[in-house]
Amino acid sequence: MAASCQSPTGCEGCINKQGVCLRGTLDSACGSFGAACVACGSGALCQQGVCAPELPDAGQNDAGQNDAGQDDAGLGVDAGPADGGMADGGGDGDGGSTPSFQLMPSTTTATLRDVAVVSPTEAYVVGLRGTVLRWDGSQWSAAGSPTSLDLYALTLAEGGGWAVGEGGTLLSLASGTWSGYSPPLTAAPLTGIAAASSRSAMAAGKEGDQHYTFVWDGAQWTKLATGTPHPYTQMPDIFMVADGTAFAAKDSSIMRWTGTDWESLTTPTTTSLQAVWAASANEAFAVGSSGVVMRWRSTAGLVMDQLSPYPFLHGVWGSGSSDVWAVGSGGTILHWNGDDWTQVDSPTTKDLYGVSGSGPDDVWIVGAGGTILHGP
Figure: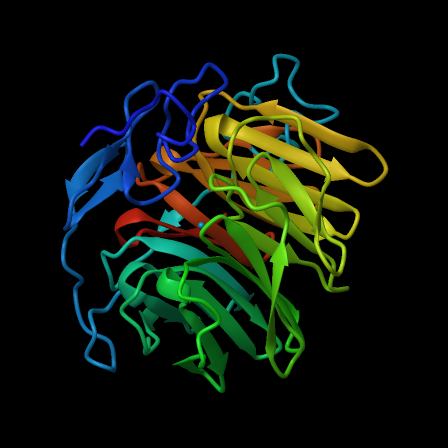
C-alpha cells in the first residue's frame, strides 16, 4: 500500500527539504529517493528501496528459536570540500592507505541493527527476530537470545550490557548470558540504549505522544517523562561518554541530557537524525536522512552538511574525533579524518545500520540480510 508523501507524518518522517518522500525510518516503510513510501507486507523486508522476500534464518540458537543469530557525522566541516560534498576517491584523505572492508561469514539472514565491540576478541550484534550474535575472535555464533522480538540497539560496559527492542524488550548481559529484564519498563518500543558503566545507563522509548527516558543507577531503572509530548517526534539513538554525559538524536536536533531532561544543541535542519556518537562531553556527531551529517562542538557550535549522493545514514561511531565512520543505505560507508568526509569502497549494496569498533584498525559494520563487514 502506498503511503501518503504529502506530509512528514505520511512518510513517517522521511522527506527531504523539498518535501519529497525518502526511505522510511521504520522497517514498515520502504521507498527510494523521490518515490512514494510503501508498506512491506508480512514476510518481506525493505532492502535497497524495494520490498523483498525475507529468507528464513540458517539455523536455530541454543533455545531453539530462529537464529537471528541474533539503528556524527560531521559535515564538510571546517576544512571540508569546497562544494559541500565528499572528497574524491575512496582513500582516507590523509595520504595514507585506502580503507578496505571485507564481508565476513554470517550465521543469519536476519537484518542486523546494531553492533557493540569490547575488544578484537569480543563483540555482539543484535537484530530482527531476537537475533543476538557473539564474536569470539575467530567467528560469529548465536549467543542464546531469550526473545524472538526485534532488537534495535545494544550497549556494552564493564563486562555486561543491555539490548532493547520491540514491545519494550530489554535484555541484560551478565557473565556471558543474555536474559530478559523483568518487570518490563514499558510495552512500547525501546529504540536507544547506552551505558557509561555498570552503574550508569540510559534507554529511550515512547508511549503514545510522550517520550520517556529510562535511567539505570546500578540497581534499578527509573522512568522519566521528557520533552513536550508530540505525536511525530522520534528519539532513535542515545550515546554516553565515560563521564556520564549523554547525547541523543531527536528529530532534527542533537540533544544533551541535563540530569532531568533533554536540551537541544542544534535546530538547523528538518531532516530526521537517526544516530549519534560523541568523542567527548564537548564534541558530538549525528547522521540522518538525505545524507545529513552534523558535528557539534562546545567551543564552535554546529557544522552541518548534506553529502551527495544523499544516502540515508543509519549509524555512526568513531575511535576519536578524527576517525569517525558513518554507514547507510545501499552499502554506504563514509569516513571522517578530522578535515573532510570520504566515501569508502563497500563490498555490499545492502543497507547498513550499525557500526562500532575497538579502535581505528578494528571496525565492524552490520546491516540487512545478515550482512557483517570488518575493516578497515
